[in-house]
Image (tube, rainbow, N blue to C red; front, side, top):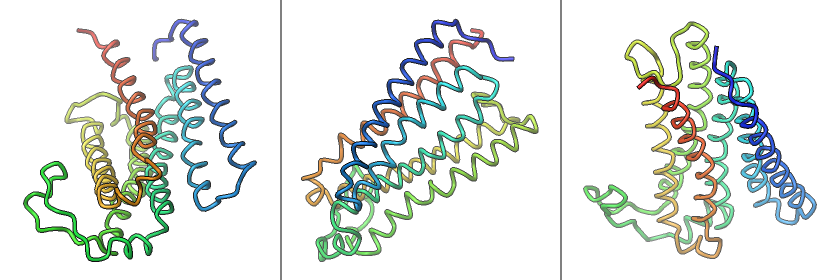
Length: 233
């Protein structure tokens, strides 16, 4: 059975989670109260709702560590949904896929070391490019629930344990698949941003994306911090 944390950890976590949820819900309420741009706001509301989901699931995982895999599964599925909604929001900002294709007509993305396209010819910024970017994000949205389902099945059979990289455990292989899929989704977002940088400049999406992903990364590193704390070195 998982070791219980000191009560003051739970109290601090409760107020932090409650504060995050209250701020996010108030923000969502304000958007719904002034729902004048539904094309954009529906995506914004979905993205903001990530905060209550993460806060609640993380708090429940802390209080009920033996059931944390189920709470984490809900959180991770919603994370995948947020990635796709962020791309959809960016597309909405620039007028939709059709408007993007017209705006970028005749242009191409030059080979770049930073984008790992240095060995490829210039990439035409056409409808096919936009479709590939959407597919790059959507594959993660589709694959993540499947991985979660597989994880829960293997966990029930005793073949899955968080942080166990043994070849006999499934955690190693699921982590590799997850990392590849996640990297593809982020790479698709990066390509889309570089291609539409001029069109997206008025909306300044980079800080927004960094804030969204900071929730994910901080949660990820928090998991590893507690995992390392519990290792017998």
